[in-house]
Length: 323
Image (cartoon, rainbow, N blue to C red; front, side, top):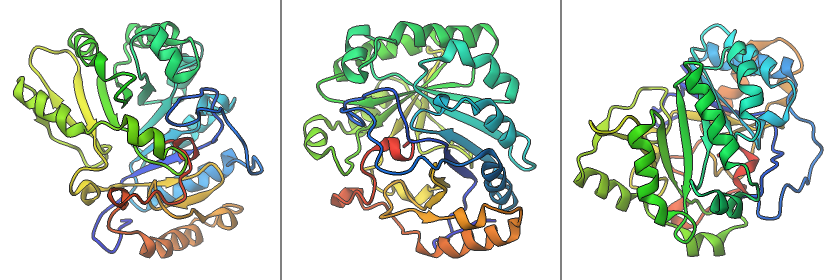
């Protein structure tokens, strides 16, 4: 089992397959995607080797992320490759949903188990203001299409921002009341290039949690491959609420995930100072050497991300690693 020196076990791999994104979200890429490196993204054979090595060390869940992973035409093949890896029980995907209706059937046919879609506002004009894209209605129609196909394992990610969507809290709750989704409110995180925006827009998830508990929402037990969200359910609601609060006390104590970037670098934390290259060990099928290399790098994993101290590491923006 892959384990760090603090006894944390890692059942969950977040695998970025591109850092390119076609949205211009104000908290991530307000100026759009700007490439400062060669686009030497992971190939399908390299992805297969990564999935096999991590699975043999106890990883059970792979989440495919970007940038925007749907920009890769071979995404269905990547999903299928991960899904067919012995030991991998769950393959999930995080997407902005811009081509959800067009691509979802291929993703499901390839074996996709779970889907996260980013929706930061339920108001089309505000959604456009946040993302730079007038796509909300199309994305919601894609979610409806998934439900019509019987696919219900859908989470919606919403980054909390004081001036942009905090006033929509009741609209979000009304949506969850009649829609069987898991809505995740994510605290805005400070990255290398957004300090001024962060200082102005950050909202603590604790205030949302306190309100949920006061109004009859109850905590849900987290599974060993679950993400970092604290989840809550209410008997009168079809959906659930999750809160991702990276600034909360002891947030890192339950860390169960590692990240591999689209350039083939292992990131021990979203806010690591730098990625640790796996590329030299991805050129052959020698899985044992790759596993030994990964295990040797685990000694550098820290107890916490140090976000609370204003440390953002090498993460310039969240598109680098898909959050």
